[in-house]
Image (cartoon, rainbow over all chains, first blue to last red; front, top):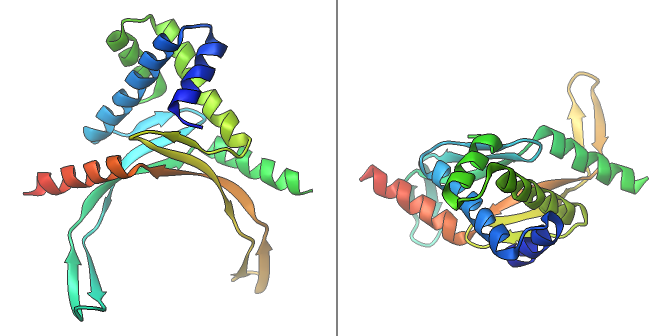
Length: 98
Length: 98
């Protein structure tokens, strides 16, 4: 499912137009991205947290050049599923197997 | 930043009321969760993909009971940052260090 399909579904269910839904969803995503850019984490209750984490400097042996190469540290975005959602998902999958 | 603060910001920026923004954001999140529950992955362009992955059955040696314990497999939710966003974030952090 992609954003367009989601927007359509959200519009149908909320009773608003697709244009309104698309505008709000896009603004929502850009607000999240802005917070992350500013280094702020974003928490959505019962869903999860998006945060910027740092990959530390690493050294790796390159098998082709036979040299140790240094990789500088960089930031990446990490999503941590909320505990409630994680447990729900886990319980559901364990239940399904019974 | 949490959902309430985000909703407020989205409402201000989009020109819609907070009630409308909240309704659409909540519907958006529940639609995502429903798709995930149905085992469908959700892709949001230039942002990332949410998918249900399976943690396989594992065996672990319990140091206290001195026994090998079996952990049954279960499902979890994984967020994969889109390539464009990942590269953007990486480039920004490397740029900032210069």
